[in-house]
Image 1: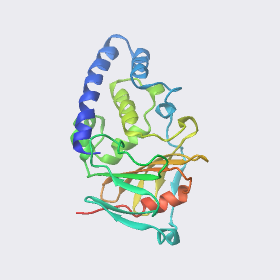
Image 2: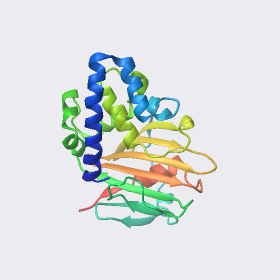
Image 3: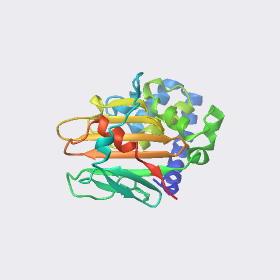
Image 4: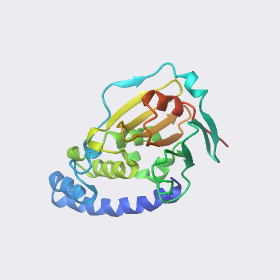
Length: 238
């Protein structure tokens, strides 16, 4: 997910927001929600747009160090991570998000990193809403709900939620959680099923770096504890 990706989608979002501003001025919140639903889906077709993280915070004090010992080290130009050896590991540095071709049914982990303040630089208008760092941007995005849209800012974050959330299987049974580890915090959207598990991890380190660790686990090998162990190893590199 590079700056080019965000710039490309920023243009689309700006154009859509201009149209939405017209709707807000002359029609009000109800028609605004309908307009958004027509463009990106509604609560039935895209349930994640009307979901929020669970109230409980997963606060883990200890990570499975023995499991980490079984993982392989993968280092990329901007980050490193320890991950299962039988997964294809890819750092996303291309403009077409999550579209690299891999063998069908092959378990894959996609990685990307955004430096502190990157979302604010790309979307400076959100500072007027008191959003001044990557974490607050993603937090607002995760809690955005189509059925609660009342104004243009609400609409913006619902639209961005649709852009930022990759395939997580059957959304109607997916879970959204907020977590805290020793040096990390963030949000995970996940789905566990026999056909395969999906984990969309939005992770922040103590330095304010944002990592997305998106896991397609077609063999259903990983559980949430395994995923916490994996994301606890992600680090930026120079």
